[in-house]
Amino acid sequence: MLLNPAVWGVVPEFAVVVVAGLVGVVAGRYVRTLVGGFEAEPDDPRAEGRAALRAVLRTVPLPVWPPTYELMTAGVLAVVVWRAGPAYAYAAVVGTALAAVDWRTARLPDVITLPSYPILALTLLPTGELPRGLAGGLALAVCYGLLWVIRPADLGLGDVKLAGLIGMACAAVGWQSWVVAAVGGQLLGALYAVLLLVTRRGDRRTEFPFGPFMLLGALAGLCLGR
Image 1: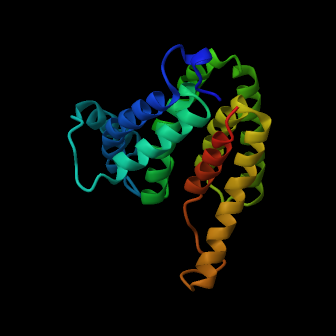
Image 2: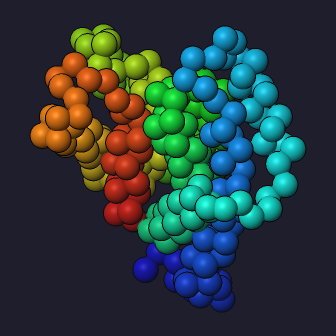
């Protein structure tokens, strides 16, 4: 198993997962603040991003009810650490934040996605799989870039930037995880579109945030583990 004593010394696997979940509860409080700092149509996206980051720095991780973001972040972080390893903790937390921001505002702010590239690269460095991760990030970004060129009305440039992060994290786990993330995001998005049609809550021209489905596909890929 991934988190066995041979890898993590005398720390039992379940203890690492429990600690990851507890850390996720605290991280979720910061995710809540970050998500609340973005709007659908800000007057100045850069100023909004700076204000959101300053709010995060001022946040005191006290309990808030209902603990939706806290429990969501804790669950994602615990599962990712269990299946992929602690090196992917940042990917789990930032992915949760981006999914929530996109679902709430239909935006993937550059102030989160762009700095995440070097941060994610540094966190993946100890795995020894960073070269493959970089190749996977480039490959998936190119794939989504082509889709954006072909159908810009259906896919945002923010999705292209997110694809690079997803490709990097999942390719570092393995190419099978990369394929699951790449295909899974498209499949989940398509299923949601069909659901909107069936329930008559939308038509073929209805737009919806695609980032959360990309990130659910990434979560499935990371859950394959090593």
